[in-house]
Length: 129
Image (cartoon, rainbow, N blue to C red; front, side):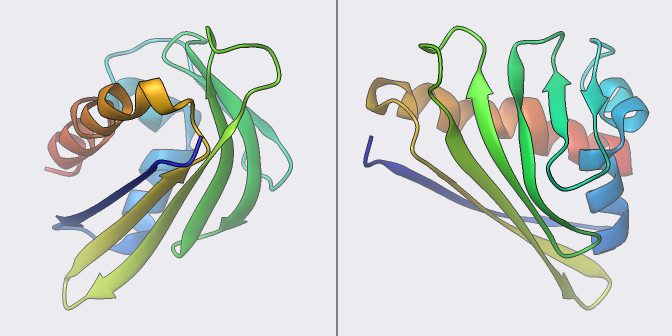
């Protein structure tokens, strides 16, 4: 479990709007196709998205700045969590999202790297207009 996914994506929206889309249950569900989503707005709170396929706990939530989550796919072995970190950096009228994902099962790396784009960044870009 030593692989790391590092991705940087620029969005034409403020850090606050991106933070809300990633942490608000209703927005996240609408953005990603309508599957049941529950995201606690508090550090230490749990989340479940994509109809329970992705589960975890919010480790740190700093509105408009940072999201750090203990993140797992439901079919991973019991007790296996990775760390997903979203850093939001304002750049003029846009936002640079710096994403790092560590601690996942090594065999999952390629699938996860592609999945972040397909299931998070592309829907987020469409959602933000």
